[in-house]
Image (cartoon, rainbow, N blue to C red; front, side, top):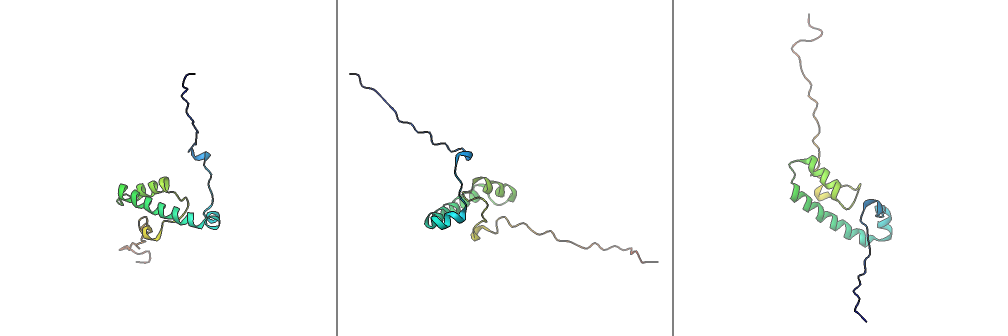
Amino acid sequence: MPFLRTMAYTNHTVLPEALEKWSLELMQKLLPRHVDIIEMIDEELIRTIVSEYGTADSKLLEKKLKQMRILENVELPAAFSDLLVKPKKSTVAVSSEWSCCDS
């Protein structure tokens, strides 16, 4: 009897539409230690993204963080919160030499 070569194959898709997404609140309730680990991994990933793309272009950094972070719709950890702080636009009153009431 000849020797038959076989192979086992399982297709585990990683397409976004095939992945389950759980709310962070549910995960914290059911799997609190897992959430701690996921948050640690997310922070390490943030460090890697910041070191790779730098902080000079805040729009690019914000885009990359949104695309690559594990946790969606979650604020940045406190250690990184100042990275994407947008400066407030100051309103400067413009004075004019002419006034509407000058005669």
